Image (cartoon, rainbow, N blue to C red; front, side, top):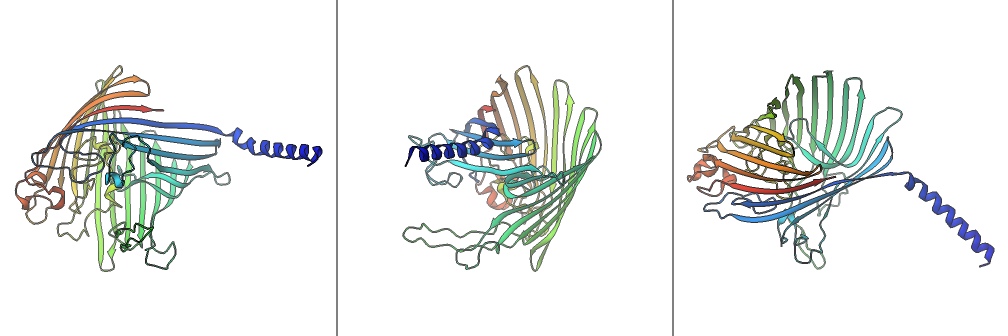
Length: 460
């Protein structure tokens, strides 16, 4: 190649590199995230999301775990950005199998080198100039307007949000299952589970906001058959449907009300649809959360009612998408209801199933939180019981008391210690098998569960 051709080629490559570098250089790169260390001394939890946490003559043991989250946002301008969010979970000492579905790839094992990166979110967030609506397209977080009693999850979908004066409207579509059975020749999009969301809020004034929602779940998935193992393919176990129902409609109302030092958020919803072609759904829920300033801190209170089914058909039971994607963070519990501070270990007495197998439940919670300088504290009490009892079952699940004290080492680094104890009700702790609620209390005369927690939390 001649010198002139070399010079021309070099110039062309340089120009191309400069052209491709301009958009990247114009990006505003944002990094956020968190790191949390959790240590437990407990007679109930064993690390991970193990469902059965009740034991007779239970031994107390110590385990530790950590979670890191990294969020990278590629921001082109105020109207366009790409959001990515990743998570790394580890139990100290590692886990061989069964921990959050792992097969020995926990990086807490000796020498650490394992595949543990989990994808939480990857979505495009932009404002469409013609309509002024905001769109989020991709794998993103979504929570219902009812304390997350129905659904809080990361899902793939599209959400459009538009604000006009005091009115905010949202329309969303999520596909949370595209289940093509291994034995079927049918392609994707045939056996699916979708969620449609229509949400509206109206700010009456600065102290009163009212809202209404409509959620629709269309579940056309089927149970998948087991796939036998063959050389080069480990096979797969049989899989259940995502939900137990075919069609679900959920309509509800909610509000955000300020009265002087008090903030109250009431909500209520009704569900109807079809379990299958011969069985209809008719269920409901209601509740409220609130906070009242008192002294140097605030009094918190929360409660809910989820309808249940006494006969076991679940027609009148409040429906969720899955127990693993429901929460009620305002409860401020550690054991009775899944804790809002937990990382890898995030379970409760009923395996996070607040419907208690379709029996329904009533939860009442109260507490006080405050701060003095860099020291913060809270104490809480809560009670949970079923709405319906089947056969000779008892209704009382238990009562929890807990407390926490922490210190802000820096503005974004805190350390804390907490303790929680549950007085089991007859529905879980009875020595009589007929009193206990099925698989939620497999152990007769179980010990009251407790835990001590030490936590180090860093956010940036």
